[in-house]
Each structure stands twice: as C-alpha cells, then as structure tokens.
Length: 266
Image 1 (cartoon, rainbow, N blue to C red):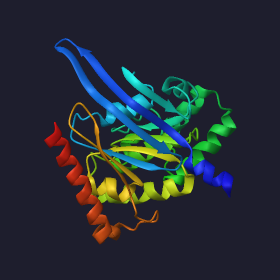
Image 2: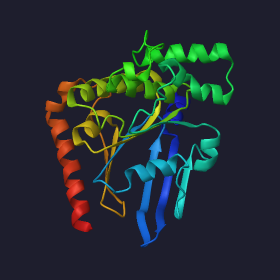
Image 3: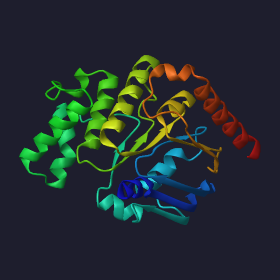
Image 4: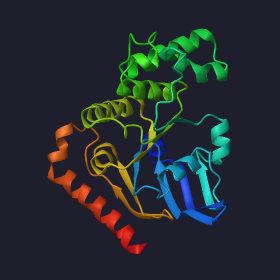
C-alpha cells in the first residue's frame, strides 16, 4: 500500500520559475514567465488559456522541442531532452498527421520500426492499441478512408504504441464537431482509466478541460503565466451528464474567473 501511494505522489513533471523568450527580427518575445508547476503520476492535467498564451509552448518544453531560457524543468527526474531520447512520452498533435500512403496499422507501426522492435512485437502492439482506441478491423484501411475522429484515434494509438507512461496532447479534438468531440472525450477518459498514464492536454474549451481533468491549469495572455491551478473534486468515472451538475458548473466558473483575472493582470 505504501509503495502504491508513493508511486501515485511521484512527480513526473516539475517546473520551477520557467521562462522562455524567443528572439525574433522585431526583438525578443517572452512566451512564458515564471511558470511553476508539479504534475504527478496518473494526473490528467489540462492547460487552458487564450490563443498565444504559451500552452503549446509549455507542452513543447516538456517534450524537449523548445528550450527554456530560464528556470528548471524535469521529466521523470531527467532533463526534457534526456526524457525525449529515452522515449518517455507519446505526443499527439492538433492534426492527426497520418501518412496517406501507409495503412492505419502501418502508421501506428512506424515509431516501432524506427525504434527497432521485432516484427512480431510490432504486430502485437499494433493490435493492442487498435483495440484500446476501438479501431479493430481498420488496420488495413488508409487515413483517407476514415473520418476525422477515427483519424485522431489512430493518432492516439500511434502515440500509445511504444507504451510511454506520459502522453502529451496538443488540442487533439479542436477541429472536430461537438458530437464527435464528446464521444472522443468519453473514450479518452476510458483509455486513461485503462492505462493509468499521466496526461498533459492543451485545450481552448472550458467544458472539455473540466470534464477530462484531475487538475486544470489556467494561463494568462502572453507572456504565459499560471493564474490558477484547480484540483478537481469530480470522481474519476464521469458520465457526460456530470456537466449538468452543480460541482461541474462551479469549477467551470472558477476557470472563467481565472481567465478573466489573467486579462486584468496583463
């Protein structure tokens, strides 16, 4: 019991005083300022804020795709670059980014091929993640033969294929209609429950952030600062109609207040 509790409280991502300033032709642009945040194993953390506030930039820092200019950031106790080289995370982008000349199974298999997994294990992993995202029977289809929602599920399956404990998702459902988005939100919660992964999720949707998350990080306009961190009291098993509950509405209101506070401070 003690070891399980210790594992649950383990910090996967630790940011302290994080700054990032880009050099541009028009002068320096500060994207992040003094970001301090701890994400623990098994958390589902959503980042919400106005466009250009640094949500995606922070996610890219975690992934080692951007280099902070101040402060410290660790992923599994390592630098983000070391974590990237050790394949500590899967990354799901805004667009599915599937190669049209590869089948769905072939797209999912690609990172496994690059990593040198044996062919038999590649197939076993592809079959397992196709089942996880409810795409069994679609492995031989091509991306253009699938709906947008199914393509995003295939993109998630690709990120899950090498079984990293951390999943980073950059507004993966933003371009989908509300009905499909609701369905994928439900499926993502089931997937999270089934895998126990730690998830960092960028969104512009207040209902989506509240519905999915154990922790909601509210960010200000650029330079991105954290204006509020909300630990959700909602149960981990959440039917869609929980969005009509008083608790849900109160959390959504606190998110709105945090977003307004960021604009006032700016």
